[in-house]
Image (cartoon, rainbow, N blue to C red; front, top):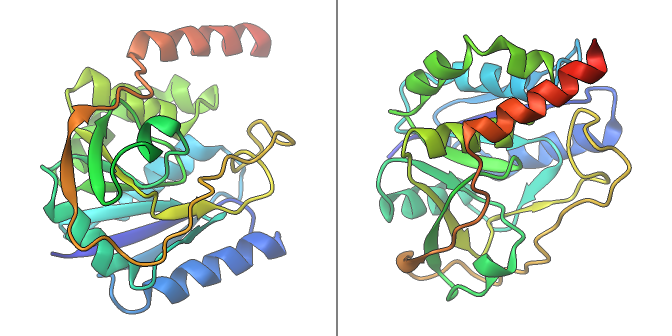
Amino acid sequence: MSISVAIQHGGDTDTFRRSCVLGIRKAIGSCAEQVHVVKDPERKGSLASFINCMRTHKDADWHLIIQDDVEFLLPNPIYELARLAEAVTPGIVTLFVPRKEVTSMPYGYVGKVYGTWGQANLFHKSIIPDFLDWVVPRRYLVKCRIGDDRVMSAYAYENNIDVYTPNPSLVEHVGHNRSMFGHAMGLKARTTRTTIDSAPGEWKLSLNHLGIGKVPMSEIDNAVEKRQRRLF
């Protein structure tokens, strides 16, 4: 099973973020099929760079998009992600969910959720062209700087795409702020507060649906309307 990687890099002049990117690349090593660092020099926002990250995918079975202010919690993360991907049907695996509904799952289990969190997500190759066809015509989402995770959640919900998350989370958000590219800057960063001593021996699917992050497209449209009123 092959995995390619795209790193959303929001601040090339930020020493901390540059060090995080180096850490991500070091952890990945030579295990990934391709690694791309996608910058946002015009500060268009997380969704614009997320779309560009999707476009870096070539032929790998799965494509990992990871933000530049996170770190892996396990050594050999690509090997672990490949094992995790084998436990689920083709869909999306969101690797960071700091919610008690997830941490209350048995250790080493994978549960279904309704949406994604932006820090790190693994996408099956079958989703990528369909998502790009769906999102590119909706240019207003980029213009109004709607968060990439909210848009991806809406896409998954509207198109019945399975979204999974593991316990424990496999990455930690080590950034100083809540998100990248200046969205909600100054608010407290979300963290998993998870320590992983070793990888689970075997990833198992949970029987329970965790029901987190349900985001229909109508909610995204409402957010766009509110921002448009502020912009114009």
